[in-house]
Image 1 (cartoon, helix red, strand yellow):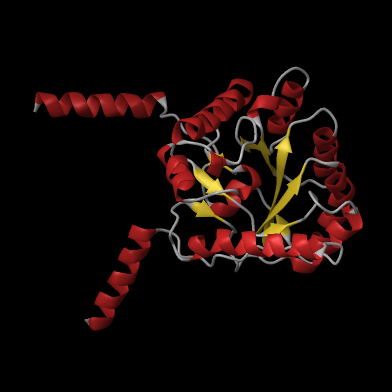
Image 2: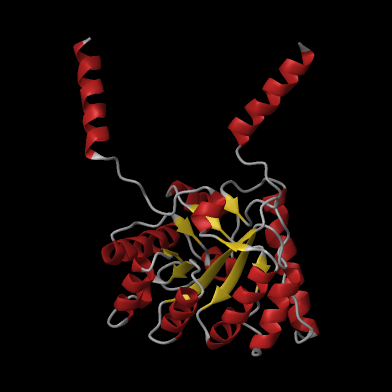
Length: 279
């Protein structure tokens, strides 16, 4: 009887408090980083990951399942008229799907075409704010605008309203996370930083990712020339190590886009309410 109560209690905690999977630290390093950058990264990573690991933030994801040999590629700061196309070509050549966290304010003119192409090729087009501010510097109203304007802009192009959000610079605090949660969005960070945003050498990025990869890593990359130069070899190296590349939403078991009720579901609900009031 005691064992049954203990098992029931454990199942109840899982249902009440959600996923209990391991939360990684944030990795990524290179001998090319100077002492100041190494110190900055170490301090930021500790300050960011500690409250997540302690359960102080709800609905913030850093990595996938550490027991499954898979990784998810993510690219920040698209779209643009050059490197985004090159990344799409590389991904297509290697039959890999990725997640692109895009900036809503840059989705105009020729950039609209690459947003649509990204979605049409089976990649995720997700929210990276409207004009890339540091969310921790904004008040609640401004945060709300960043979230809604970006997702609405993406929806106007792809027909899908994204509910996975990556804050620019990975900058979060309790107020930011709470605001994101009020939009029924999930905050997605990363567990492996490719460092393509600071390293100018694609080979250094390749070595960093290849040497630090773990099961379930969410890999942070950007739509820049360094990532374009590094991506083919990263894919080849990780495949040789036995890693499968999976889409972010599939890895995490979450919805990437807002799901509208189907007409049949809506009709069923109306019928149920009608019967309830008649009763």
